[in-house]
Length: 339
Ligand code: ZN
Image 1 (cartoon, rainbow, N blue to C red):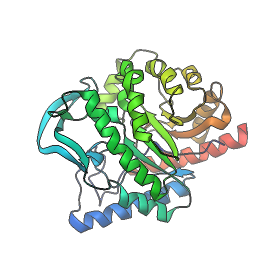
Image 2: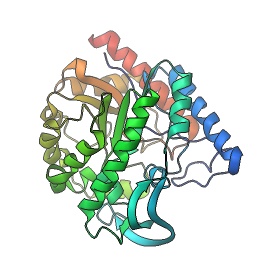
Image 3: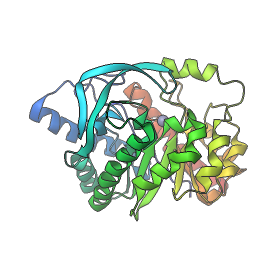
Image 4: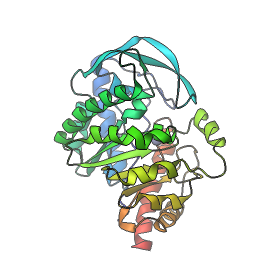
């Protein structure tokens, strides 16, 4: 009970990429970059194991960004002529690549890191992929002429890679859909249907991660505009509860999300965010146990997993490691106290 996992990413070692940055430039190139990514993946697993994380990830050490790590392996995208686009409903401006032709995978996307991770841990392994709606919101389109049609084209590619990850021995495949918290009215309409396309034929556990973003300034500022209670989840949870996705990963710690909304996800495993990634203040095991206890009011104990609010990629490494440890220790404390 109260198994632990992380949203997905961990900071990279500073010999691999510039620290404390999203889209951090690599510090290696060519074959050194490939072996550096592999080495960092091993370290990420070791750190999680030593911190008491039960369902480990590759720490997303082999990708520069959670969306573009996937897009780099897709044909039909022009990366040479990026254009500026407002994303997440204009919360940020970003230079994004452009879809110019029918989308097709060049081959495997995450083979190296998935197989490396699988070969070096006996724990359950989770692997993260960007969700179709979030991808469609992070790229410009000059081919499909319809954002939904383009999202489903990406869903087919995600499914192809997800099936291969399952064959690699991955136990959980998680799709990151921060866009679900922005385009709430489209989640029931097509967002979940696109996820269903992405998980088609999978036998492993499936998850969706829906957060309020990394702890970067644009997100912190946006959260300030959301009022005293964040009720975005209320709109999308009923549709998610009806979906075929097994697990839902959510932001809870220091969030203004009323935890009572969790009761709308009946039948799902809930990955409760007990670690805030937007502050350098490290949670105590007591804090973690308290968030788990609060969630227990609305979610059956056996459905609760302890997790981070979001990825830790842009954090300081020592702080991220201390937070990992707090996550493991806090869940152990909750087990002792509530089981
Ligand atoms: Zn997130």
